[in-house]
Length: 242
Image (cartoon, rainbow, N blue to C red; front, side):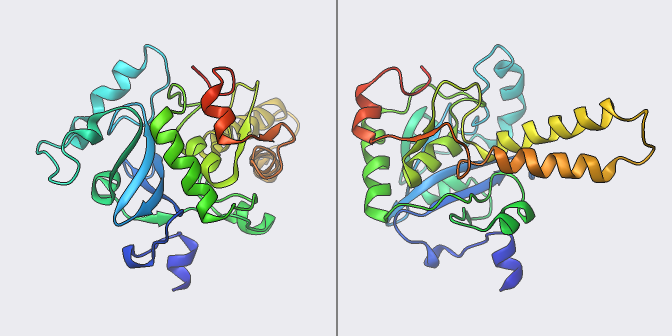
């Protein structure tokens, strides 16, 4: 049970409406996130099914060429062709998982737990009530969440917004913990490179830089995070990347 909790694993029968769920893709390269609605349905945000790491650049063509094995060759009896669409979509849980393991994103964790977890699996920010989470997800399903972009507006940003109502405005990086982990890694590497001539062993410095940078990128502590009503999100072109 402790091992399951550490890796955020959850059984399908334990799911509750409004849960933020995710599953790893391509091993542990990245995770795809969504909001569980009920009766085996998930609302999630994607650039195209099986292509959830769209960068918004010409590099997408190269990245997507490696995903042919993830594309379903047979039509889902529940979803039909809908999982192949882009934007905010509703699909069955099986199409969302695409063969991956089911995991549940954690909210309101302590700083210690946050730093012990891998990137993009938890946040110190508290979750709103399930009815608020579902209201946001369902309204965005009808109205969209802007254009998908790996760094500014991805599936994790969507799910975190549904759960908390927080968005990051006017910044080059959204609230995604996965992206925050990458930024933290770059910061740690830069620190080690900058001071490599001073000390032969900089592992503690690099680790400390990584932890601090990753923590400061969390939606629960970022000062520029703003709580915005979903009705305002869908009525304004300026609040989410287009």
